[in-house]
Length: 210
Image 1 (cartoon, rainbow, N blue to C red):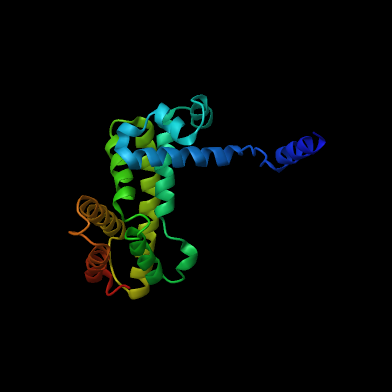
Image 2 (image 1 turned 90 degrees about the horizontal axis):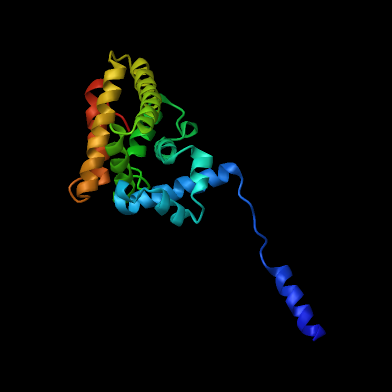
């Protein structure tokens, strides 16, 4: 009997202790759960109940951490934007920054159907969801500024006269369109061809890149 009690006490002691997530960890967990729902079934799968089941949490935590389900959707948008940006620490020169930017467009972590389906689902909500629309404007403005700055720096270095902002807008639109084609049919627009098209678009304005 004593031995049984000892074994029981030891078993309880060996059980992993419950670890409470920090607020930031809980937010990240909910964002990933929401993204998984969207990737699996589009915006129709993005509901409070489905996200809560995916995350294994109660309904009230979404409102607690994000204010509303729309706040969570905006946070998902901000996360996928942030993850798609190249690390500036890996690009020491203007040309390297442009190359890193284009490589980020076709990075296999993002240039795949599942990731692109998330983008499409989010884009489809921008015009009808005010909170997501505001987040899009913030993210796009910052992203456009970064691309414009990178193009302007390379143009200065090479003595080229370009409208960096217009060129940046066109490059972003081209990359978005190539991603859409890949999402619809990966065989029609493989990543290598998409990368080559982006470089070819810049060459008449900036000279050879990459």
